[in-house]
Length: 132
Ligand SMILES: [Zn+2]
Image (tube, rainbow, N blue to C red; front, side, top):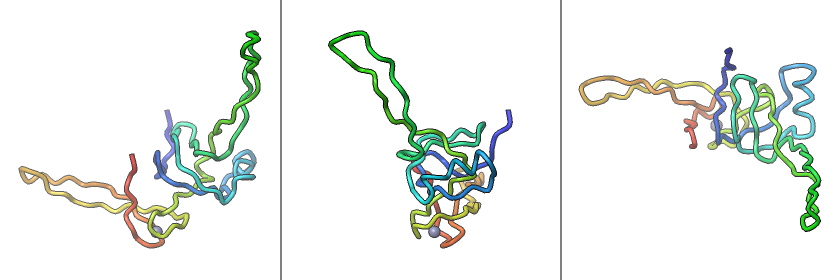
């Protein structure tokens, strides 16, 4: 299965921007453009992410037959947003930014060198660490 390349990860703070895509993807950014939220999950296969509090949709609940619990009604849930419409917000400069990758070599016991890929803000150059 083809996976979408993205540098956005779970627990990142992202901002909704107008998408590069057309049609359906553009419609995605609509009402939440400029808003921020925390990434709840990333679906690399579909190229979408759910962001806390953004693109809320109503899910209707079944009416309960139990008279004690009238139930029914609706709950709000996050719907996935196209990754093309999301930009990572740099924790340092607090701006939505493009992400670069910095390679950091770490020497380990036995002289082995391991290379870590660290995300960096293209605006201020700060490291953007994963928050898990
Ligand atoms: Zn920055």
